[in-house]
Length: 121
Image 1 (cartoon, rainbow, N blue to C red):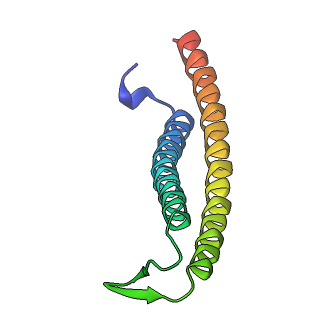
Image 2 (cartoon, rainbow, N blue to C red):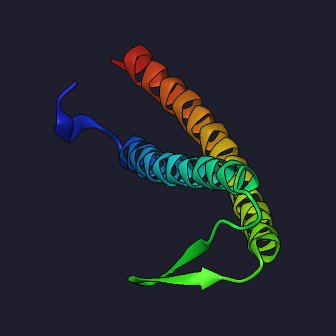
Image 3 (tube, rainbow, N blue to C red):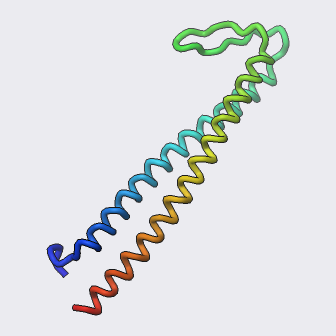
C-alpha cells in the first residue's frame, strides 16, 4: 500500500498516535526530573539531620548562601517542598497512565483499520 493510498481516517489515527507518543516522552522526562529533585531533597534532609547543633547551616538563595538561624525551620521547609513535589509527581504518574491507555487504544484502532485495509486489497 503506497502512502497516497492510506485513507484519511488512518492518517488521522496515526497522527494522534504519534502526538500522544511525543507527549508521553515529554511527560516521562518531566517525571524523571521530578524524581531526581525528590531524591536530592531526601539527601539534603539526611545531611541536615546529621549536623550537630553548633555547626552553621546555609541555604542557597539564588547565587548567594545565606546563614540559617534555625535548621529545624529549614527541615520543615524542605519537608513541605518534598510533599509538594510528591503531589506533582503523583499527578505526572496519573497523566502518564492516561497517555499510555490512550496510546494502547489508538494502536488497537490502527491495527483494526489496517487489518480492514489489508482484507480489502
